Length: 288
Ligand code: UTP
Image (cartoon, rainbow, N blue to C red):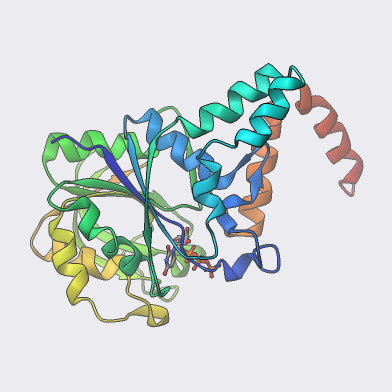
């Protein structure tokens, strides 16, 4: 199974992050020195994915622009002799091929993935949610690509969440057939606390086969009136064609303020120059 494409939905309104996201896409908010979505694209590139399919809306074009050249800026940097940062700025334009698809109405994540049907055609593809960050020894998407290729099946990434957070996620029920690998039998989108079948929550990493489009086309609006990807995945689970892999590593949902701010600190703490002064300032701020 050869996989080169990754669908990255970025067309949502980011209402949880307002007013910051009134005119700046949530996926373009900076985490330390880079916008959120650049981390996602870097994870894809490092996993060998070469073609990024952004599902976007008409007001968020700066996302595609970020992955393109900026001749005026590059000229200025060149003339100023700022060659290191020039190299870094250009590298962003050369990371991956960008294919852009419009989601004309924001009908949900499932609908956003369905918008990629004509681009993906008969090929398997990865999906990475544009505001979901994962870092670790093995990147989230490469763990899924390995599993999908060896089992020839669609795979979702899951993490274990505390009991009082299950109502924020799609939750799976399945049997563990190898350490951290599950055959998925059922999925529930945002179950009420106390009713979830497990604590294994779907995060924004998937490897899907084109048959998902067949299921997406039949899904009715679910939780929040949106076309949910989780509901289409249930179709695969019913046919015993869906696996889940428990992902290792750190994960941050950039649409949640605590997570967003923690991600900034996480990166700053990994920066040689910033770590010490940052810790000093944070200590000053912490009430004792
Ligand atoms: P979220 O539900 O986290 O994003 O979707 P949102 O709807 O933008 O944000 P809130 O909940 O109102 O704060 C996860 C990802 O899917 C994209 C979003 O852009 C985000 O990156 N998305 C969501 C779409 O592309 N289309 C949609 O219809 C919904």
